[in-house]
Length: 503
Image (cartoon, rainbow, N blue to C red; front, side):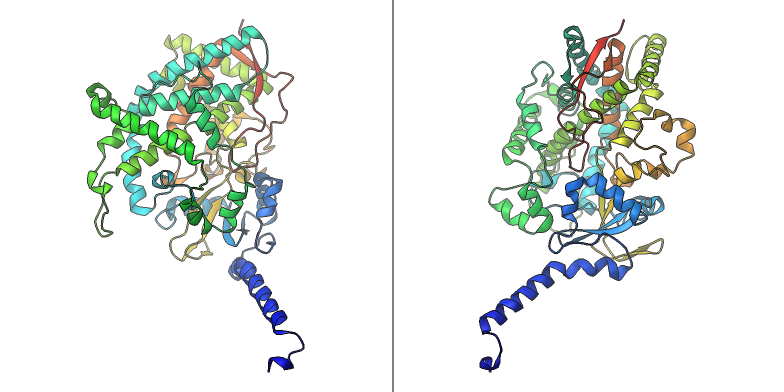
């Protein structure tokens, strides 16, 4: 029978394999067409991933405009529904939060991060979040403010030294040391003092974690073949360097041991101590699925402690640097902040927690910086079950991305979006604008748990700095500043500025 074929059996088999391979590569690409959702044309196997080469933010802005804010893309073969319509954003992240509870999980992040709040699902996430949330109450933040003040004083002392030298310097390096000292002191009671020791192992290891590139071969594999992540993890390959995670894991172990052997240390009221109080040793063993869990396990304590240390470092340091950059380029706004800082400190007699909370124009400048350079350019939710949101059918398992950067740069919402205009965040402007047009910390019950600490940290650093110096550009300042092609606000090539002592 095979002799009757015009080609040899080998060629027939090869052709059949080629057809099957092609079908495998393109099979999911009809997903959004069936749902009546538009989107850019995918490339077999890669989907739209190669378009990230122009920059995720640029790609999102183009698609957001072209496809009227709701569209579908593909990362490899994985369908991603992008939703930028503000009413849909509200429904997905708030009203339908029980259906869109979980975040997307990337395999290959390692066992430590795997127990962190960003990875946990459903009841486990709610349980651990409830143990962590009290850390950021007003009362706890006021206690933490004393540590933040001390770190802020060290930060300013470094700035004043740079002012004396009169040369440009990388503010991102200094901001990173400050945020590392704050997070170490407020969350763990550890005095790192990396501002006096910029090469401290904590800072050196934290920097390695953020050497992230969307076109790193391992990252590409995770996007194109997510199931391979688990396999690679077994061979010691993970998204985050194992050596770095082990370093922070050991640091957490050391602090926990210290708390166990020292009564005074155990009296601290901070993130780690709240987690230790919620520790349930029963959860350290295998727990049947039908048992309702209470408290947190040792792995969850460690995973969230490491995550807290890491998350508290990079994004806040970037935002301090970017706000200073905006003020250096907009001296009138900087003058206004300085006037506000001076007036409030003169009225209150000191720069403390209450004083910082009265600095409304400073907060407007920080908010405008986070609008221009959101710490997360996108954030996601996963649909648990088939649902319909305002006429949009979303099948179970669909990954939904909210394009925060594109929303923040929508000229219909934010006229002249590339310009720094702190007045956008005046009381009147905020009241007249849809609250879901501003999403620097996500939205809904699964937003950033450390938001209030981050804002306090930012305002303390900038207010204390502007008491003594003013930010100006130098010959190394890049205008406009470059942001790395990641999904965050990492600065390309550092933040080179000068500071001048205030007369």
